[in-house]
Length: 476
Image (tube, rainbow, N blue to C red; front, side, top):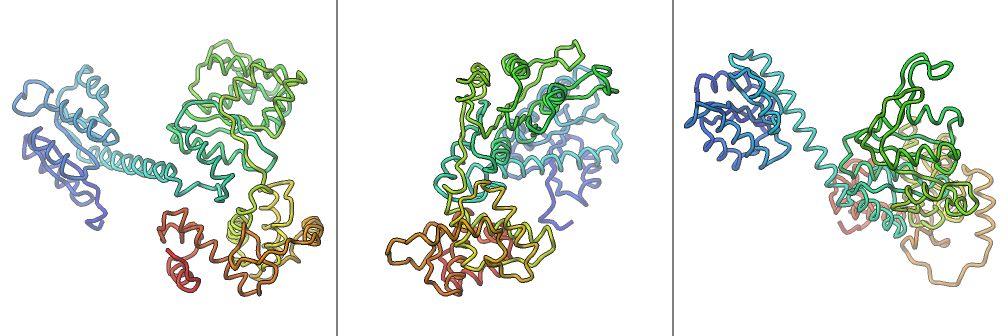
């Protein structure tokens, strides 16, 4: 393993023979530092990037008890709560083990120790720490807005919702996501989960509309063996599976009145029973619900319980339809074209300017989901790397024709894309260059000018991105 990629292990023991035994066992795969006392250990912890600590409990000047070892454990955890500390002890009593666990020790082993077991524990701890750091870094990037997962776009309407979602993610508030079908409600729910303190716990989704009414209770709360015909074994429901994480209830407006009552009770008490069971189960979950229906109108029509609506609608995020996000249509189309090309092993596609104009003129009643389907269809049936309007479905072309036949205002066309619109009098080559220029600028802006991240986002090589920046005269 190259030196610069090695993780660092700090071995703390006052016996040199023990330190050397651990050093020779670990030095091939790790950078190993040694300390014989608490003072030396704390100095190294302060000065070096430590990934794992191996610490004896009984150290001078007080070798008669475990005070010094516990002090190193507590100092390590205070300095870096994620840092795994593995305790070395000769005390096999339960009280000692309980004390180190209560203070946050990752693991412990006893003297005399088996060096193979120690290597396994250290390897597991080092990997755990690496994953923890990756998770922290990812969440940090998400908070900065440099990366939004699969949420693509930069229109003011979308950015406003993302800012609100990022703010509510840090809380435990119940969220109701509303918007037309296909606007990305589940994706937004996952975004909130991934930006929340529950990010490492499960995200469990349940589409109420996709379940027969007779199975909704079993799916949500689980069932015991024999609870109904066909229940041949105990089954956990979505609430149990989502414990410590997030439960996403999609199409909540389709829930029956009977299930609305039961759901309200669970949201109030965070307790429930499996179908056919008597044991009260308690869960710690965050609930995010979504619907494309107007729940306020349903409440007024006595089709949805008012108390459940207010319980779900602590924070409301209304996703804008795609027709209100014209700036995002070219960016989304490019994203979906790249995704479809990879899925179907097709060459990466470019867009003819006439196709982009057709996409911008269409109203997209099916929103993002419909756009993705249209672009994937075009990539699949295309015999060329250039996608043009002949690959679009008739309904897209017919609506686009009706819009394009409307007299346009007599404004001087801008050379760049204006709100995503390609000026009709641009030449083919100029239109394509302008389209590329906007995509590159957008990627650099959302990646805080990091060319490596922008290339990854655009799914092109860094060298090609450099060439585009130069050719298109993009500031970056």
